[in-house]
Length: 195
Image (cartoon, rainbow, N blue to C red; front, side):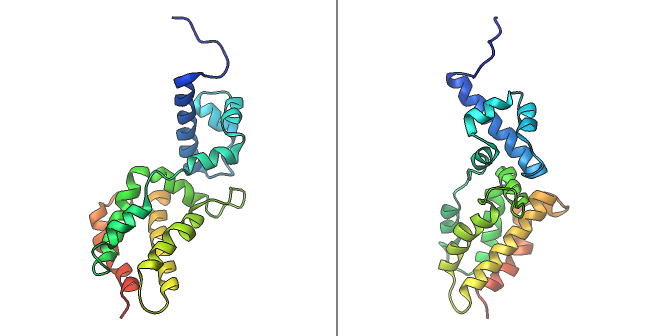
């Protein structure tokens, strides 16, 4: 077998290399944060030349945007959660949220870890919450202070996710989705259906 010469991968090799770089960067951004992760470090971990990252993604923020592609459909999950109405929706929201993000926890951890990093690109967990989570919650709520209640539900979910996926504090980090929903869901229910 002859060794491939230096240069850019071609065809399917290029696709695999690109996906490998994205996966490596996603892990490193989620563990270290945006500011502390250099393209050189990503390249070293991925086993590629740093110039290849520039070729595929332009710069660090371009690569960061690629790693943030949501692997889930929060709108479809919202429809399933609220299809049975607001009664019991607090438990269903928490269980759906955890089931949705557990397989993709690195993406959410990366978004959360970089949410308050002033050097990171603007698209982060707060933007996802503002433009996806909160408007869809707001549309389902009734009664006074709907926007504020939607904000608080989103804040609670983001806080829970930060402990589970970023800080990885036990016992929350390894609790089952049904246990988290059973314990945490009632507090959300109070915001969904206030007295």
